[in-house]
Length: 171
Image 1 (cartoon, one colour):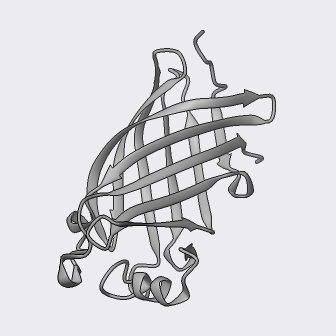
Image 2 (cartoon, rainbow, N blue to C red; image 1 turned 60 degrees about the vertical axis):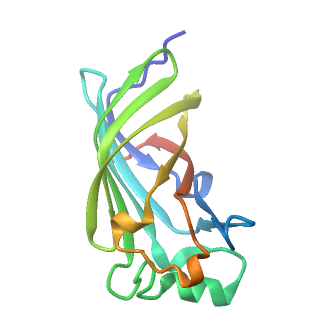
């Protein structure tokens, strides 16, 4: 069954959405998990069925349940929240494919460094009030200037998971 989405403006419902990260540390023995508490976003579904939009995550809202670690993640060694308070993803193209699958091509900006990012999302819920998308993808943090790695404890890529709920934007 193919999903259809109404054309027009859409708004991220931050209270019903979540964006989290997980990364293996301590030479792969410990997985650190965190979530961004402050999210924002808007999008537009065009008449041809494609979509564009922007998502933002407040770096200072990242919570890993460890205050000392969170302070370090906000420092210049990682996200550098004082100089780059937001992470931004701009979807340049999002197209429904294969039923509930959405192919997204965009640009991720972290620490003022932008890189192309393509991912697949899945429409997990759709009703009169809106729709939800789920996705999971990996990011190489070193591409965004986050190379700090004391004693080689942090290796590999960071996994980003997102559940994004959108509702029709009111004018």
